Amino acid sequence: PTILYRLKGEPSLPLIYISHNITKFGYDPAKLLQDANSYIELIDPSDRPVAQAAMARVLEKDSTGATIEFRIVTGRGLRRWFETRYTPVRDSDGRLIEIEGVMIDITERKAAEDKISLLARTDPLTGLANRASFGERLRQVFAGAKRGGVPFGLLYMDLDHFKDINDTLGHPIGDILLKEVAERLKQSVRENDLVARLGGDEFAILQADMVEPAAA
Image (cartoon, rainbow, N blue to C red; front, side, top):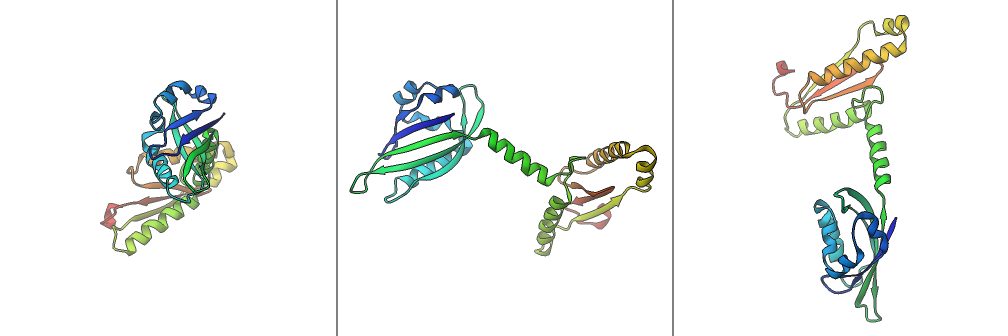
């Protein structure tokens, strides 16, 4: 659902209108209007600086509208993502009269974006990092080491005779073996180490903070 709202154009930007759809998220429009500055408390505390910075910008002369994203805490304590577009309304002298805004629930879209981002970084069979994300992390630690940071360890391995497993028992059994290897590798490293499947039966481990080569 879409929520429409208006704020009065004075420094505290009090709420003067909010559409009935806010009830779908557990809030009474009349109560929000009664305490006209309480609407800021609907925003997740970690996102409030974003909203407050946007409000500060809109008070500046000649500022134009903008679009920001933040989470709303619903009346049931859930977090929902909203895209908020607002437009300042000014008089002929450029003085701010009101702010007109529209809030669109984008929670499902954000979840889909997060899922796509995760899929782009992980191996679909094992859930480990894939070749691309491993390479990105490797470039980061290598650049840090060149600047005098802590050295790192890099382990590369594959499975002996893995082709024999696929040829005799079938690819489904080979996949089970790969997933089991991935799980054992994850259990054998530290929390800040990165395990990746590079493809086929090839795995790699990036070990952070390897001051002594023997520690690898």
